Amino acid sequence: MKLRVVVNLKPGVLDPQGRAVQKALTGLGFAGVSDVRIGKVVELDVADDTDDAAIDEMCRKLLANTVIENYRVERA
Image (cartoon, rainbow, N blue to C red; front, side):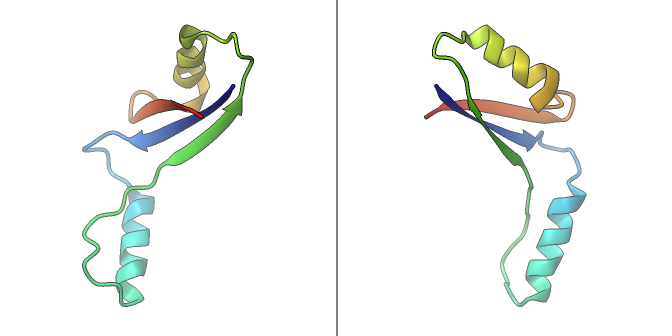
């Protein structure tokens, strides 16, 4: 089974990388970009019988820092 885990910073958490991209876009002449948030996508190929609890545990223990990040799992 193919999974995609999308990880983003929680609202209110500062995103210095996003801020740098926003400034770069403005510097390149792209007006109207008011905010940029950077996240990550992790693609996994797991056994078909992998249960939701195991997938959630993978995310909480390694793929996302749940103190500052949210994540969602998408099944392909």
